[in-house]
Length: 501
Image 1 (spheres, rainbow, N blue to C red):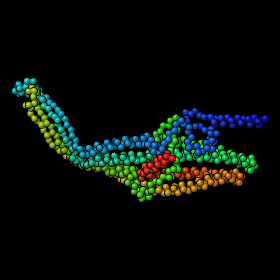
Image 2 (spheres, rainbow, N blue to C red):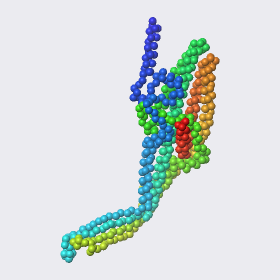
Image 3 (tube, helix red, strand yellow):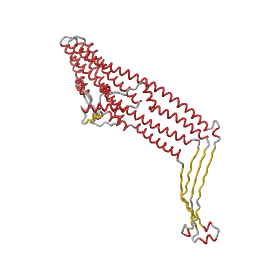
Image 4 (cartoon, rainbow, N blue to C red):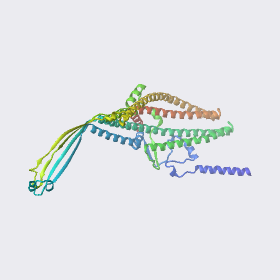
């Protein structure tokens, strides 16, 4: 009686767990997502060809790689900030050109009045003016001035503004390439995560079939109950791997949406057009070590920025040193002037009193040459900054050489690995199919079957990961040599060809 009660209690607990497990959470917590119970999961595992995506939606948006890149470029805040920096330095550069070449020009208009009753002591002046005051008009007064020499301060300021403008151009270009590269990698990362989910589902399907076959063989007396127990244990142990893979896929998808600036809409499914394995059919530009280094040293924006910093450090020293050099200013002014007696009501008898003049000034600094003063200390600090910038440039160039060599070696190694893993995956798949048939007739043990299936799943994972790593390494090199657009064009050709078919 006690045993019956215990069995009844355990059965009720199992049913309770099944109900809790099958219960769906509020849909608002998981927009665009289904909460799978075990029956749904097994149906998915039994029908893998329909498992490219797991969302159910009333509307489907299909994105190509180029569309994803356009969204990332349009919505990237750092890229927008780099564009604002470019506009700002361009304005400063334009202003420095004006300061360097264009003289200062100013003009003014003035009028003066004089009351003869209070300002003149001559009785004839007072008698000659019925209203008693006169007016002088100066229109216009023109002043043209230019600093002929100020220790080359304008020249160095112009050079700094120009280098900063070119540097922000390089920064903006580099950020653009970085966004394109990152969007491309994240695009194909979605396919990798989907393939990993499909692999775990395929493993579940294998274990389900293995469990069914073990049960049949046990009923026919071919194997012991050990095979059934082991298969059941492996089947349940493999289920968390699927949920982990699905969690990683969902997290990667949300991070992908965030990067490209897409806000997920309820009941709308997004389908990415492409395939992870299709990139192996794209021919990347072939560059050997010397060609890659020559191209990178000419076009790499990071090196260009460091060169700009080095040139600016030298210009900054010249700018600080210009304070200690003489300064020559030249000024030309012209002031036309007419005087009129208002009492006469006409300028006909007015007198022309216009004037012009040229002046020059020379300033020779003296105290700024004394060691230890503020200017001398600033010049010394600027010299130290030149050496510092030069070391940074040399260090970056050495690192770039090592990086290019490592990337080229890595690409060569990964290319060989992809070929090896592809052959391994094909062999492991065939071995798994043979082992499945042999176990069905009791010719091999459950452990041998399990090992063959595990080898096939591992080989498939290794192939997918090696393809992704090879793509990543090639794109790093393509980003460095500024050749990503050709890769995007090749992908578009494949996608357009699929649309025509």
